[in-house]
Image (cartoon, rainbow, N blue to C red; front, side, top):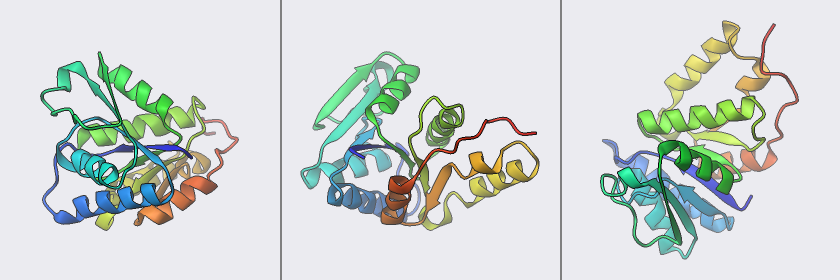
Length: 189
């Protein structure tokens, strides 16, 4: 695993625990010689993780659409900053550049990105690991929803297990390294 894409908020959240988790994830990426791929901004949790990786001499690849370049304040000190035309191009490039995907706390954008990339995995567009860094139980309600979708027959058990989860960066990356994509069809019944 050479590069991990991290989806996270362009806001910082109300509690310092989220920024702390981003820094711990940065430490783990550096410790395992893994490069960061992310949305290219210098604000919020996005800026925290990028700055933490850069401060330790790591490589950071940002991907940001031109229309968000000023709004999200594109980070100017990255190893590489890709300016793209659209959000679709952003997500596609991030997927191509990455060997795995982690969601830190965030809002609609973060949720949409991790759900889309796990959907791509479910449809066999890729076989890369996808996970949630469940900082202080942030994703507990999402996990309960997914369990409910499984119990109601909308997710196969094998597909539900594709979305890895851990409360620590080291635990999550270890699970990602051990991950093997299931050999099942998406459809239930």
